[in-house]
Length: 636
Image 1 (cartoon, helix red, strand yellow):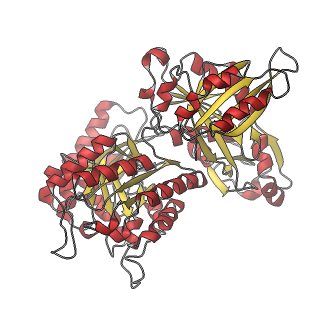
Image 2 (image 1 turned 90 degrees about the vertical axis):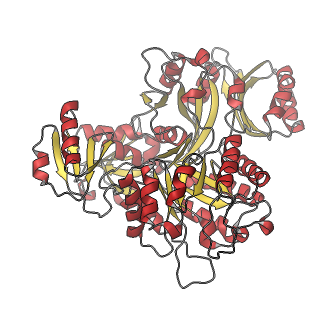
Image 3 (image 1 turned 135 degrees about the horizontal axis):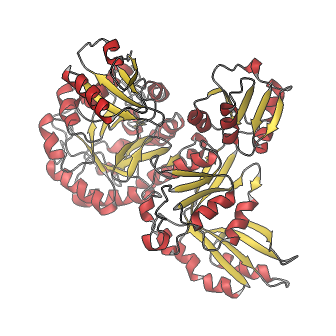
């Protein structure tokens, strides 16, 4: 059952409720959500829900209809984010797990760990105990394999996962791995599930060879009832009559499972297909279907692999797959999980210490649920506090007053073009630096108060751009409705909610509907689906070297002025050409207080940051003023 607690419940009353449930044989999980706190109580006991509802501090008791109680979305509406050290699986990001099928030697695992890390993997996999169909096949190196896997993970900053096959191996493995892996053959090995669950550690649970979705979720329930709430589900293909592939990859299971459970689900295209050339297209299919990540096998000499060589990607194939996934991310409104991510600890205390009163970490323009906040959630962890600001200037002010550590601002839209206000604010505030960027696909939704139907709508609120971008849909379905411009898409949702308008709708992103507990009548109503906005992450960081540690910088933003004479800009462009730097953006902006004089905002991309730094003096020599706004990793 689900016990919804009152918002003002006393700690003593909460403790009494929990004790009463446990005394009657229930396992109790406390879940703190954005709007309410609940107890999830599961067990063999059958207390009358009415007796619980009468206890002090209880708002409501709801029975859970699904046989899997703790894993059910009935118990927890918000998605669970599973964390392994500095890596998150679930939410608005896609995590990639990669490595060899089996750890074969120290040289082999160190070599492959470096290759997958360089390509963008965030978790290292490798088998130490191998359950094989034939007793004569390679069975793994055992604890020595775990030791080597951990050594490689530590060397390249990667959390590690490996398969556990026997309950007796759990204590040993818990000393090495960051996440247990339960293989398909052991999905219903309930004694193993209980032992692994007792550790409380993250677990990757693969779907059984012929398991139904309900059986799969019931296996997850065993883990959660035993003590862990950090479970990642993995679709790895099921056995059917088809022989062309090793298994049949059930991509349809991804969206089905996401409706039934709050647990993240990823896919394993390597074991699903068993054929190297099929792994990449199936990996992309899983991402397109909504998976929170993939796990693939990679080997630099698959012809010599001791296990599953034919399904292992070559390093160069894996590198291309990572580029393809990153290109697909904006389409599915997710970001590729990276190491390191933007986290507050990367800011140096002496250069950007917050004021004593500051509690917020990231500032953005707009109301809660705005597309800018979606960009924040794709870049930062879900737990980071945010500061909504009324204007773009207020974001910069919050940074400079040290009220926040980061800001996220839009700089360009594929339909509307450059957001000049933010370019000008960067030029004005030379101490604010660009630390990175993210692309967000703009998907517009028709959002209403609960109970409002299409025929009730007489007014539609949104930002002017939102109204313009959905013109065809509005002309077709709401030709007679008034279209009322609003300062912000998410703000329009908040407004019709606050005013309890039952004859109005707002156009905004789905996070705005979720944040305000509103209904979506229609989704994807924009005229052009190729609608993306590019956002900058900005910071008061003074040390540019700090930015270089955050990945592989390959983009720079700068502002220059050149002499008012023929060929002056050409001299700068020739420096770019000489150093093989590609200019991606050139914007001319008027200089305040100097009529008919202009500053040039430029973005260039390059292969290595050292190339840029080697020619900075040459650029400065050909300009009358020069500001380097930031060096960062572009959103490929």
